[in-house]
Image (cartoon, rainbow, N blue to C red; front, side, top):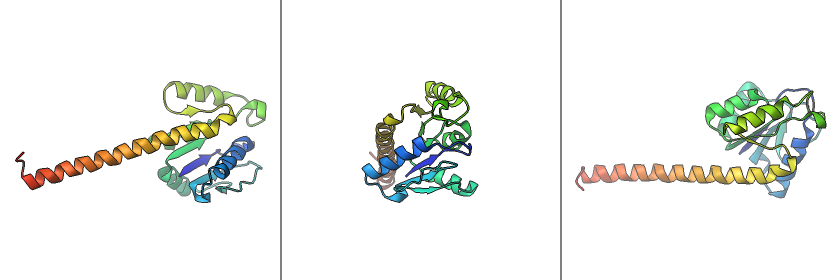
Length: 166
């Protein structure tokens, strides 16, 4: 599941919502595959589950369940993902699109990307491809983890059966 949050800033972030709705439609995803906290945006999402705001409990639940977090460039929306070790794609709000009063989110995302804490998408036309690339890494990582867990358990079972005699 992908969780998208635009935060609580009063300016709309329709640019992100239009693109995530298009992504869901083009990839024939179920409405439950992407959950969006849309904030004060005007765009009405058609192909994802969306709500203006969620409770703190609901937000925590979505962060925990998500395989990938898409967020605006505010650190408050990134902290829960960092704590949980979730991959983040950040789409900073930009003043030229009237999404914020200045470009501090661009600067913050550049800095955090240089530290390896997120993938920043400044050109919205790159979002779909970026999601696909990051999700493939998540799936490979998840597969490796499951494989390693299986191997560890298998080795433990063999050890218990053989009683340490190899």
